[in-house]
Amino acid sequence: MKFAVALSFVAVAVASVLEPRVCAGNNCNRAVTGTRDGLLPLASRSADCASFLRTTVTPAAVTYTVTVDDEEPTGPAKRDFPLEGRQATAVATSIPTYAANCANVAEYASACSCFGVTGTVTTAPVPTVTVTTTVDYCGDL
Image 1 (cartoon, rainbow, N blue to C red):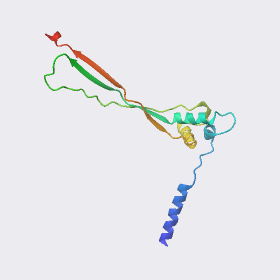
Image 2 (image 1 turned 180 degrees about the vertical axis):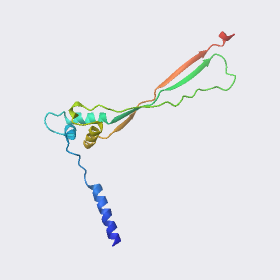
Image 3 (image 1 turned 90 degrees about the vertical axis):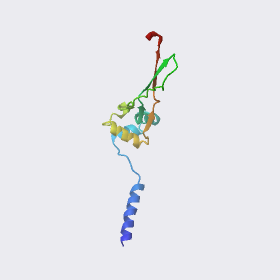
């Protein structure tokens, strides 16, 4: 008997996972995913959603300092190691004008996910700055 009760709970849990979810039929979703006349083409709205859901991460610049002299080194070479910098993350914050019925960016992002568009993360290359300093030992004499 206990097994039958437990099995019924498992069946309900599995059925709820397999049940298709539908998005709310609000004006924001209609503006983003709708097919009525007067709306931008679906491909254009899908591209807007993809652009909106894209996050761009720009790593902090790394600066290397190199010291060059004309003499042979007499001791071990010293190398400057870059400090850990902070990266910048850019996300979209403006909603397209055709989606003015969306109350905020979270509602627009939800409508985009109902449209089947998922978010992506793009990482920009690490900018590198090299500073070269030439030391003239003859000037010190």
